[in-house]
Amino acid sequence: MSSALPLVSVEWRAPRGVHALVTMRAGGVSNAPMDALNLATHVGDAPEAVAENRRRLRAAAGLVHEPALVAAGARRRRGGSRFPA
Image (cartoon, rainbow, N blue to C red; front, top):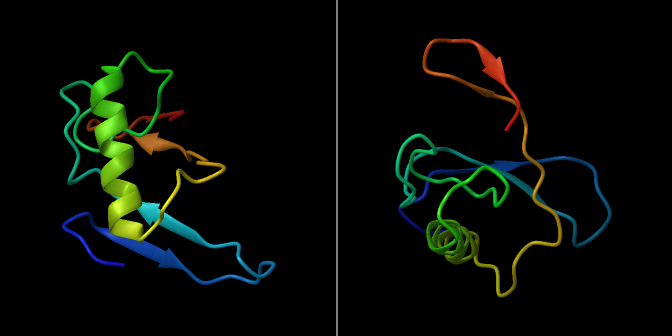
């Protein structure tokens, strides 16, 4: 993987061809309140920003196509409370 996007590889037992990684918030183009690398289309972010963020993710991860599934975990607000992604 190469890029300015900070990505964390996840090593796990999975079928051949199944891979996982974790993204950080840095490196994207979304404006507040989404902030930086928003990959979700359902939270009111500008569609163009989400498309660019996903393009950057594909480039950083060396993917030709959009991942079949992007699973979002819980995120923490800057104040520390949890909310679903």
